[in-house]
Length: 184
Image (tube, rainbow, N blue to C red; front, side, top):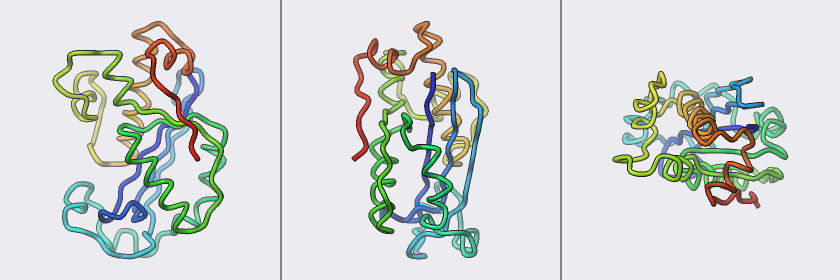
């Protein structure tokens, strides 16, 4: 099981309004590295609803680096990797948008969604929200904290592999008949 789980938080409804990012690297089924950054969005417009969700205030990121300033440090951790996110459609669209906003190079990577993995591995759950799954598996969790979200996402994929006795992520996806998509 080798992959990187990510999670973004945004300042407003714009996908490019990244205000935090976390990445958790899994090698051989073990979390080996975690990183978290507060990020100054390209436009300092925070919606009340977003603040209510993640608790990040404009003053928390006012003097933090922008995404383009961090990209050189971030890119090597996802380049040529499989990247997971819980509800990957959102996080992957955020990554696409922020890369486009800053005209940054697009990494070569593949991605998959742990919502889909959980649905196929544990059918019949009431829902597949991150907080529900964290509770089900007794994972210490603070919802909408990017680091907690990414770590929980990683643990869900690891647990799915254990449940199905599979220690290779691509084999897990094959058994579950789920796609691993190219990021382009």
